[in-house]
Length: 165
Image (cartoon, rainbow, N blue to C red; front, top):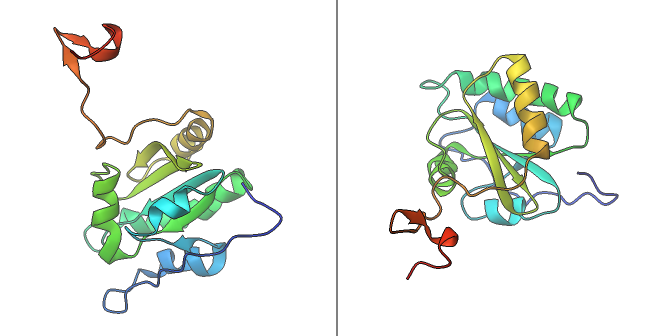
């Protein structure tokens, strides 16, 4: 979502020793993506509206991350003003990925007003992206894959039996 007064970056600079690949840099330079790292991602995702964090991965090991970085501006055009984008410097990607349970590169992590919604992992066909992004913008928040272990009592989820004792 956009507001009348743009809130701009929590300004994390890409690392100078391991610069972000050109297409990731282009997202920030030409398409207004913010830079976030493991310390600023929570504050950035807590802002109102839909937010997407790109974990592109190492450009040599995961070249499709650059393809996702190239497709993301096109998705922004199809869903104008529906979400804000952030990119993560390479040296922070592992920590952000662990935090939200992302185990595949590249990944788009979706958030709404501070809550995790879902992820789209890997490079996808255009139609798959359109359906996935549309669904992510409409679905309710969910639990990131790494947070919490369901409590089971006597083989039943704790909330169905009235408690875990």
